Image (cartoon, rainbow over all chains, first blue to last red; front, side):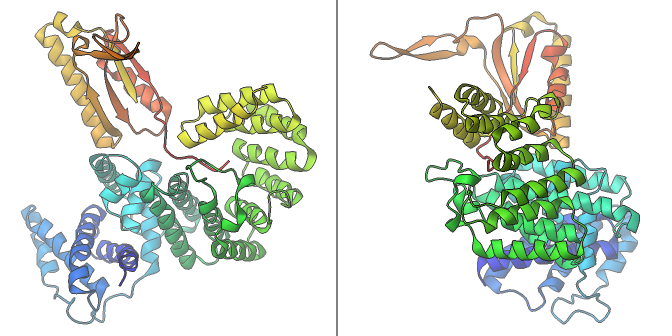
Length: 412
Length: 119
């Protein structure tokens, strides 16, 4: 088994094992710790000794033992629970018992809903999802988010305590709550994806793994909820975006904007899968924001060059997006598309109100788009000033480099 | 990043009780930031009299004792935090004893990231 396949196996089993434990014993806090230790044990023992015949049962047994060890060292009031737990046979060596429930996708879903609990700050939702559902270790998550392991481990500890304090239950939310909670789950997966994707490829290996993990979890969610159009839309959006990875950085690590990318380097397999997913979803589902964004990405993907892009189609899709999910960032992208159809001045007119909006007034992306459109109108001096304003406002080094280069080209 | 600028030697003018109270305030904030998972790192710097400044000079470089800027307030240390919003970082800075007791100022600066989005 390759190390990649081995990691995939452990990460697929992680939420299943955690689900079994939480269902049997409750106490999300303790179970999650125990599962992490079991995953660690597997990662050290299996490569040498081989993967056991029933890997999931093996992990459940080891995690249960860790749990009972923990209980043994605790107060006497836990004694009764210990008695129940230790009476269970070491069934790892034999087939799972008849009363063992089959691996349940519902558990993964319940875990996702639990980890994206509304009482948690978003950074904690992300960390907990990656650990409990993704099976990543605290050290891996800390590396990916460039914070010390102690910081990440506190963040996860606090998140678990908060979930327990809020009395959150390991159940599927009611139909009424479900859409809202699913929205939080999709947002967390998309944040994980973006965290990995905004990193340049090459040297930022750990972050690229985040993209892969977000896609894996979205795929799993799509398998569990095949009739949810937004889940399909998010997966399609991730695949279509990630397909650009090889083309979006130049030989010196500089950012290559969409219009200038070598499209022969886009991942055609991912593009085809993304297009198929979103096209199908849109036939039976009311379009949601992720589906529309995926549809826009699909129109880009279908064009052999930036110039041959079906811009009127993209403008129409942005109009839909602006209606169902109004947001200044949507207006910003819409302005670029409108400029391609009706000329840069039409695009600039659309941007005007964003300069008055607190959310975007000082945002580097507004300045960058203004700069681009001003350049198209031939106003080199104002375009240069806007590029420099954008360069000052961004906190991304590659982006600043890109914007400074654009400004330098406009020196009269 | 929260950059701490204060008047060198201010602590010498305090009573021991006052000094302990200030260190206690710092300990409380550090404990909170550790528990919330917002603390990324930080260092305190030695007294500015221990500084050396390296600057370009004719035929190479020149090394002199003392800080680069001669001013009442000097760079004394920094704290790196990972916050949800810039407002939260400013809120942490506002609680720092240097600000609360008037010994100095804190500057809140965003750290540049090595990554960027597609444009």
